[in-house]
Image 1 (spheres, rainbow, N blue to C red):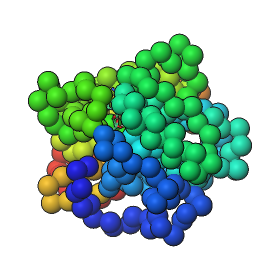
Image 2: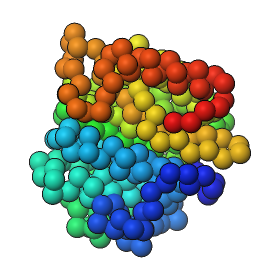
Image 3: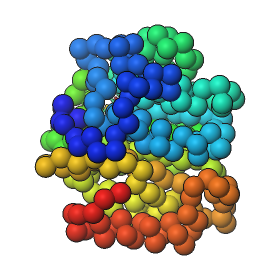
Length: 268
Ligand SMILES: C[S@@+](CC[C@H](N)C(=O)[O-])C[C@H]1O[C@@H](n2cnc3c(N)ncnc32)[C@H](O)[C@@H]1O
């Protein structure tokens, strides 16, 4: 975010994959809308890295909260494409200029999606409760004074309040409500957001978690975390071959991640 230069590491060269993801030259922009940046690219890289699992997942409803330019939801639709013909895409943003820009980006790539101006998923929660199989979120995660949070212009793209957690902490229960039994959530976080605490909170709600992509600068570390329901009692088990580690494996994985976050070193 903010033009930081993340270590490209294992980053996928997007310019070589025009048919799988949105083409930057066709992504529309607007002065009040967040342009695709390192965090957007990392999120799309995470989705690409998990693409075979996503195809096997056969998502019926894919949703993005905070769609900005439309780069991520368009890329998701393109990468699943004809191999997932039954998927429906929906995106929201609190910024009406972002909604208009996303619609143009979708059209430029001949992709269909419903795009809604709303606060997180306000007005959609009844309709979509328990139905979203894939949710993607690149939230406003930059720590800012609390009074900067809550706008609907470009500041909404980054203003995250205390520890950058104010909007994230409002999105998580909405995600829990909207995700289906087999639902997956992919979320961007920074180290300053305390991702281990986010994972523990989600664990209390029955979710396992795993880092799909990590990018680092000298100042901070960015993670794309995948969450999925981990308890079979009231929810379905992860499908065989979905790439998940199962209850025991996922918790062990999570513990090792917590150690990683605690020590401030390691890699994904
Ligand atoms: C970091 S930008 C990400 C944009 C785009 N998803 C990307 O990755 O390039 C965060 C987006 O979330 C939107 N946003 C912030 N608060 C929101 C809220 N309460 N409800 C819906 N969208 C919100 C912002 O307007 C902005 O477009």
